[in-house]
Length: 359
Ligand SMILES: Nc1ncnc2c1ncn2[C@@H]1O[C@H](COP(=O)(O)OP(=O)(O)O)[C@@H](O)[C@H]1O
Ligand SMILES: [Mg+2]
Image 1: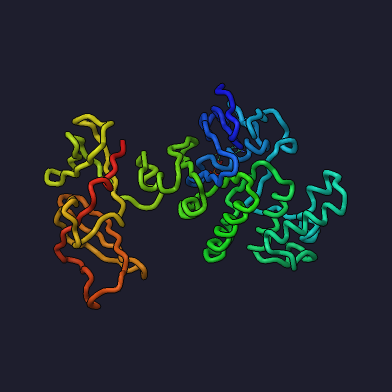
Image 2 (image 1 turned 45 degrees about the horizontal axis):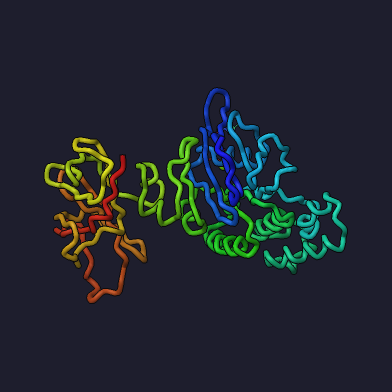
């Protein structure tokens, strides 16, 4: 085993879970830094909850280690681990009021009443529920219940807070508001958040770093910008945002997608001539008109347009069997009819560095 490095709030070493012969978490290695907002992002069933449960101690790993603050806690029972969990269901005590829900963990530890009252007060201040102390959970909205769960989990000042899709039950507007709030609470308390979500938008907007999980393995780990701009696998490119994915053959600095579409991929060094690869280009990186001389250009025909308010999405055919998605901002226009229509012949272009080679 690699010796633990100080400064890691959570480290996983070869963490594995097998259910009935099926490996659902497959030898995960991961280091989450102290104070980091870290997201595990992946589709339903990829092993996120199972991973969190092993970190919390609710599920025993089939193999591997869990370290919290550099200490091996693999055999430590859940209540002795310096972590707390916010579940998707919130799991509030319905018969207790807000104050008693939040103070529950401290009362169980036998901390004196004066200190409990003070810390509960601070926590309710932090989550802006100071005026709801006497309410039962049933009297609260979804967003408020979520805040109670958060306050209850943070009051013990754990080294790490594990959050399993805590915003999934909220409607879109409230979810966006809570994302911003959760992030600012995390900054304020300085506790490491390990956040699980299947929502790529949520992971990108909240996290210091994101690990993209698929089929029990981490496919890529990096900052939001890094995983979006430089995906390293076909899965990552397709799961985060949308990508135009084109299979082709690598040949001396280009990828031949069709006989008349060769895409330059400067700086790419890990393929050799003849390799089967894919090229990914993000829809918003492709422009129609307004080219710089450094752009790669190719003619195409608009197949369809769909209007999305702030943006318009075009499908553009660029030769045999290749249709690219192009996303344009609906900027202020000189004329109202200054948009493309199906059947229009266009030139499209992109900067060479925006064509990413995937294997
Ligand atoms: N207790 C269990 N027994 C058997 N299979 C399980 C159990 N818990 C989870 N699984 C399976 O493990 C896989 C990963 O599940 P889970 O970790 O809940 O995924 P996620 O949280 O990413 O949606 C799924 O195929 C799920 O059916
Ligand atoms: Mg889950």
